[in-house]
Image 1 (cartoon, helix red, strand yellow):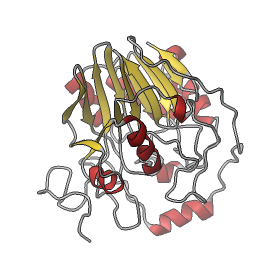
Image 2 (cartoon, one colour):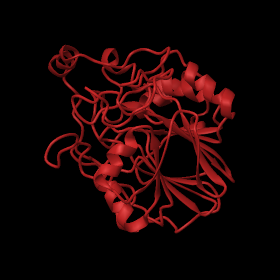
Image 3 (cartoon, rainbow, N blue to C red):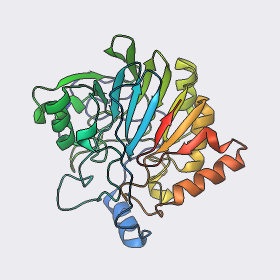
Image 4 (cartoon, rainbow, N blue to C red):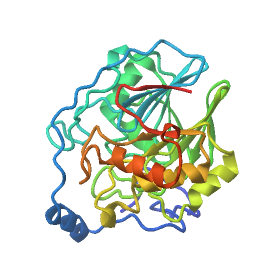
Amino acid sequence: MPNPYHSAPPSDHFDGTRFFNPGQPATDRTLSEVLRWKWGTRPARWPAMVLVEQVRPAASSDALKITMIGHATLLIQMAGVNVLTDPVWSDRASPFSFAGPKRVTAPGVAFEHLPPIHAVLLSHNHYDHLDLATLRRLQAGHDPLMVMPLGNDAIVRRAIPDARIAVGDWHDRIDLVPGVATILTRANHWSARGVNDRRMALWAGHWLETPVGSVWFAGDTGYGDGAIFRDIRARHGAPEVALIPIGAYEPRWFMANQHVNPAEAVAILQDVGAAQALGIHWGSFQLTDEPRGAPVEALAAALDEAQIPTARFVAAEVGGVYRF
């Protein structure tokens, strides 16, 4: 079928219809593989609800401050600017309000207690990252600049015609406000909103340039051979803070090419040379088979194995406020 989101000549990561991860393992899975996973394993039982102490952020912060909202949603505050990553306040990470992965933690910040949001950084179009209901609320209350990879603009524009959107390819630099910009970075992942649009919109991370240091939001990614992370360091240097996924990784035979496990997250930390890191993408929505607390335990073990101080890479807790 033709691509409904993006039309352009082929490139080194776009074949004219679908995007792909050049030089890295394929992320596509067949229906038989999906059924083998769903019928062949029994996922760990998560609690139905985990209590969260919500916080109320200040309207702004001069220093770098990051608040964990949940999953891949973080509030980044610095130099008087407020940025959200992959905002999801809905109860389910799903196209349906009645089915799909259900939130087990309330958002770390109640939506009505958000400070003024200047920009939203989107990594890709999976439902646990691109939530149109939340984007509509943000548009109505904050009118932020929404920055996203190629093709995702068509999805957002269709739902929110008056949204302020900036779209880019890997390595493109986009100004958010004077003095603050994002550069879209490579990730080993894929995209889809339905059954026929696999890899028709691009996926990415975001390298945030700010007056108080750089913050790298990795987005969703597999590790592959690690080349893309070493390239990020070669292009941009080492970030002050890296936001790296540590959850949604079991079973490995199915997930390895698209989601890192905690040991691979530590390898990414070493590849990019981040001074500090927060572990994200865990504990809010059960997407895969591992127990809820497994990413935290596995991260501690991987840091110990690599002889890296635990304070350098912390699993971000929902409602946690991290100052740098």
